Amino acid sequence: MLLAAVLPFVPIFTFEESYFTIWMQGSKIGYSAFSSSPTTFKGSPAEKATTRTEIDIELLGTSVKMSINSETITVKGKPVQMHFAQSSAGRTQIVDAWFSPASIRVEANNNGAKSKKIITTPKDGNVVDDPVAEFALKPQKAGSSMVFYVLDPSTVTLVRNTAKMIGKKEVEIKGVKTSANAFSIDDKRMNTTVYTSGKGDVILVRTALASIDMDMMPSTKEEALEKSNGTVPDIADMTSVKPDRPINQPLHLSKLKLKLSGDNLPTIPSDSQQSATKTNGEWTIDINPTQLSTVKPISIAKAKQQKPEWVKPSMLIPANSPRFIVLAKEITKGKTDVASAALAIRAYVNTKMKPNAGIGILRDASEVLDAKEGVCRDYAILTTSLCRAANIPARLASGLVNFEGNFYYHAWVEVWAGHDWLGLDSVPPSDFFSASHVKLSHGNVDEAFSFTILANARMKVIEQRN
Image (tube, rainbow, N blue to C red; front, side, top):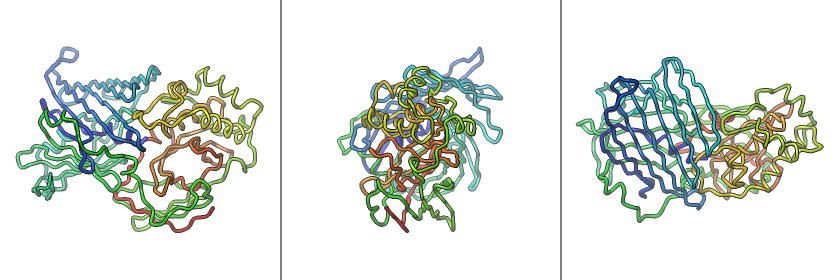
């Protein structure tokens, strides 16, 4: 799920015939090519900006190759139409958006599964194609700022950003220290700093990911297209969070209390399963998950009555598909309470699915069901779709989970059990929901997967119990 959050955010520029190489930990992982040209839109003069990004990286030891292409048409500096095409491992998601003063009409085609969405145009900032050109490439005074929105094609949602002029700052580029104008671009997912020269040219775009940086630097076409001979970095390892002491038997953990700090800590959800309090910039998180198998049974009918909005279909979750309704009935046959039916669905997904970390884009549950392979987010999307098809209120959750010593970004499911939302993870072999799940977000795809990638995170284990 991490690539889906990070890579589509690679900034879009409108430099004519420009190339940027993308680096992580000293290894080249890809490039972006940009161009712009005059065009017309409904008879009016317009500008068309195109970008092509190619990424080659590893995720959990598996090669991941991604292509991200976009085209934006602007009239008088405002976007009127956008087109995105993201592909990885033979899968493609195409998103088209049309802009009006009051709303944005979006159509998505995820490997043949089509969906539509209307997004209300925000009032506190413009939707922009190129945040760098809109702010960093224009004269600014130190301390000045601007709120704007970008369209994330993966989750089909608008992401609020704040750009600020930091001022003069020394930065090291390829071993050489230089003075540059620095601009910060902050949103809830990650923080990016743009450095420009005295002439106003972009010389570095740096995005903070965990304890590492992803850099974009201007280059020639030959440099951009040249294949890297270095070691391909594993983004899962590089963005994982290492606790100050080991977690004993994480799959069987019943309680975990820890302190989490970092440069861009989000608002961490707090409920009866996970208590989160913030003091002096540090979160204390106490996780005590209730097991579905131990709760007082609640009928599926009653749970649906209590949370009717969470049995509806949504983007990538075709809960009203006849195919999913029939399959859900087969899996939950004879089971009328939430716990037993949800656990049966969890077991089905765990048995049928096989891990494949090489697919770098979000996928519709119907395609996941066909392929029966994927990463944690695919397991979660399939499980949520089957639960909702069975009339069990369910939502996606994302955050961190402990695996082989470190905490990695992960996705799972929560189902409504009558008194609270309880965790359900289809990846591990057991029904037991471990306390090593640290939730950062929940909801449908647009909410759960627009999560924060922590920068310079530090984790201290206070208490653990199996």
